[in-house]
Length: 305
Image 1: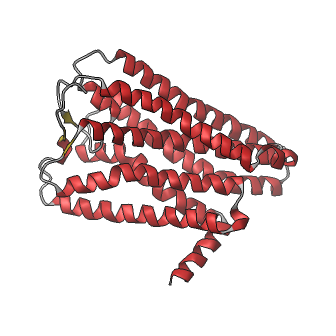
Image 2 (image 1 turned 180 degrees about the vertical axis):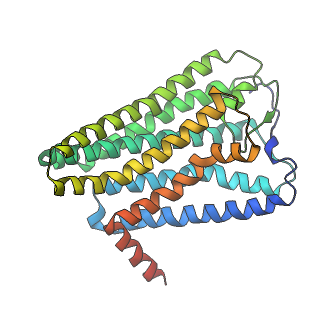
Image 3 (image 1 turned 90 degrees about the vertical axis):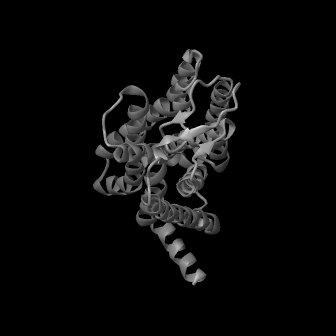
């Protein structure tokens, strides 16, 4: 950025003593997120029987949760205890990049999960030939790295802007909010942002919906036992998908589409839901629904005691 001004997070102003309650709540939530996701990762890494595509993707989701929340929680917790909530333009762009790449990686992982379930249910005899560990590794690499490269271009474009203001009405760095502070035309960045939304969210979501519709059609033609087993493995993924998609839709609606009049606290909660709820909900859903993961986690807890 041509001017080296610092950005100010305006929503931290006038919090008073409530900041300490918010800090305690945020600290507890972050500890819970770390513990739950580390347990999932350890359970899958240490148990050889869980070295299968579906479980590997679950561990990838937990890794991504740790990655995304690491860009948000430490920063917001320090801001809650600080008298001045400022951030340099470079640090702000890095935080925005990490949070956006967390979103893209989450959708990519959900898409690969849907693909895994689609092959397992619709083409069971060919599953082990199609979804091999090598194929899965390549798909994870492509679907994580490509959006991050595109987001890197977006970050580079944003870094070249000249700022006319330095007040951010968010509790974290949001690329669209940064662009709105620019003096120059933001047409190119907005077009690029729309392109990023298409390739990182819309296309994966369409492929996910297609996969589950095909699964549903196959299940309706199959026996009740087959349906029960298929639903048992698919429902956790669908619950995670619905929660994450609703959270993203709310965030996009708040930041881009409309200027809704609502209480500040509610607006902050809705804008943070995708950073707080999925990292807690995901490991809980998988630990409760997959017996193998749950058993290994119980063993890890017993060993630690």
